Figure 1 (cartoon, rainbow, N blue to C red):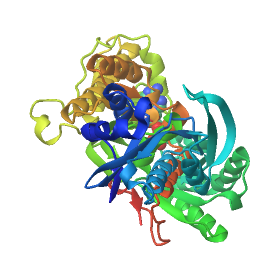
Figure 2: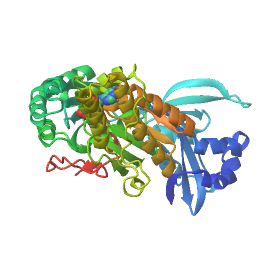
Figure 3: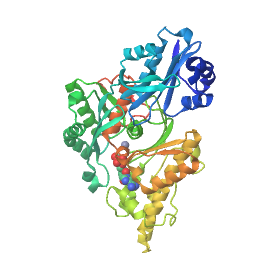
Length: 493
Ligand code: KG4
Ligand code: ZN
């Protein structure tokens, strides 16, 4: 006996028993196809050599609830516990989707089904009179509450101390302290300063998150912490704090990958990460292009920067133009009044010869140098220099190469979805170009709200919760900071 999720390739088998299971209420092949293939519906079949029954749930993201649509076992196999197993598979799916409640309608005269649902913990919450026509039988509305884990996430990979709290897929708190201002006079993040700032901000940020969620530490079920990639000293502070919380409160701990956390953030925005997806993560610390087939088990690094991160390039070019740190927003502002076509700056790793080894990698140091040369040359020769034109042309080059490579990855892997994450996503031109080119190519563009795009604790908590919900074992306390943690390692055990 096997229970597994159905695909449209099971349609013939389903339609072969649908009339027997549901008689006059049987669905047509068309409606069954859209049920099985639907984005928000999940069907499971019971197989004993052949299909002997099936059932489905629908779960609209962000509703935090599922509805059992249908469930049925062929007559000859009834009374063997198959219905219960099928129902349990549907409930497990609902739980993994983040549902906090499951609802169903059942005929008031179907005493066998009602008894089964009661055994599974459903309670009757309503009656719909004369619901089933033409017989005029009542429908009982039943509900089962599902407990979702409360996870506190610790983020300290760079200059943001983030503590987030989630319950399943639901965001409860996202407290943040940034040491950005302390790095401003150095023109970039200073690792030792960041680590010290984490140390000072950690306790108050934890308190703030708990307060925001209206919870005490004892109500938290598990701790999650980003253990890389990031700055070693900064990571150690977050990991130390997370381990201390776990030990002192006797909670399991999950060490998770910061980059995968950026992808997981979309769960909090849209109720789930629709997969597969290409993800472009662009911040002051990383520029990574990922192919995510499965959030917990199958994340592939397609390419990354071989020198500066995208945000770093904005920060360095801003310095050349005499703008304050962080440079991204400043360049964005200045570029708005400039001509993006004024100067043709180089697009890194975009030549035909780069397409073999570095098709999905990025390089911004050549671009940064070209901008610096342009500015120097103008100054040396006393030529007029339009800073807005330089800013706009630089921004155009950086954005062009980022989005071109991301869309190429979508095409190459035939994934019609692109998720953006990281602080550089704030860039107005990046958002505009991403939207235009995704629309033109028929690619769904996903951009979580900005507070979930930049480094934050909620995305770490969310990834931790996904691991808990999938029944994964916690990490042992032996894990450490991994500055260069590879993206394929979603959880460090
Ligand atoms: O994700 P994030 O907040 O944190 C870390 O990298 O730690 O990203 C910060 C980076 C900085 O380099 C900043 O200059 C860049 O994101 N950034 C921008 C914009 N806003 C922030 N870059 C380009 N355009 C922007 N509007
Ligand atoms: Zn990040």
